[in-house]
Length: 387
Image (cartoon, rainbow, N blue to C red; front, side, top):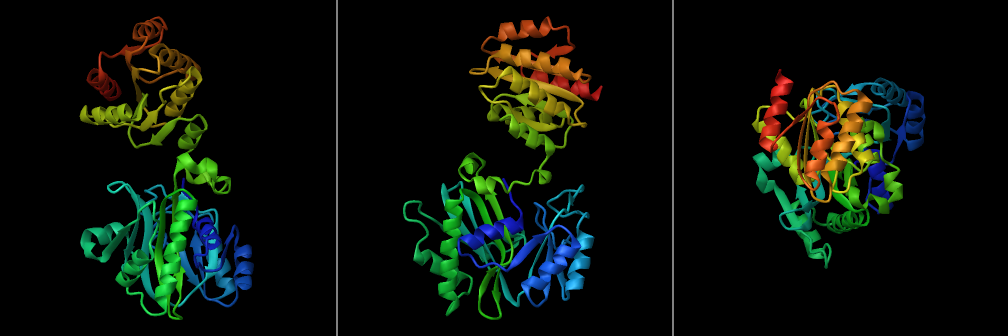
């Protein structure tokens, strides 16, 4: 789960991380009035979408008068902002953040993430703030500094000092940097984060540290413990099919292909997408119905796949263990009847109650193509879609 920048800064503020004063606004008049309340300008008006690179796309602008704030906000609201992370379709801007400007001396980068190679939370820092960290890693990897955190000890003072020195933060900035890093780590752990990124972290000409932008990623499996954070979810920023799938406990990710996939088990789902690609097709989604799916859940999964207008065929690939093949077959038949299936459907069943499942499909009266294995099924659906 992701949240907007203004929500991220509200969380950071609660944990003592210094951020600029600001307020989210939904129209130009409100933006003008909040600019006045925040004090003397200049102010920054920032489009609020779940994507990076907003500045390059025209989603971050400086204003020197409250009237200019109103004009910028009015032009931003309702625009479709396109960045390298939104894709060509872009994202609709429905809210803006108006906040105080600051006197920037230097821009730095700080993030905390779960490093799977060490199985530890790792702090990553760089002097190249304001840039894409992937670009820095590719061109100047020596400018990225890391500290892996022992989960039993936590972030140690010496690790904070190492990071601060690496970023050139000495003198009066050293204790401020140590306190900021400690508070960021406390935020990361308390909120069950998967990512906490500050880019840029700025050193102001007055000698302060300020988190000028913030990005959070949360562990979806732990979000039930954080109702306040859960309430920050903006469904308008998410794929409607993915939102609908989450309501039925389905693991679904929309892709750009035209072959819908309905599979049980994440590993098998990944392998199914691979074999479709290998056979010359393009998967339209990742969809794992899980090991204990009901007929109703399978039916909903089928409907979600077909709601994607790009889907020209469906490949159902089931290995029945806990999930029984007859349950899948019944769900497929029910869904196909409810939606008046018009696209080719290839089904491969193996495992528990496979004979009963195949019998149900063959007696359904529906135009269902049976497959003898994964490779056979992938080839048949690719051929059917291409026909």
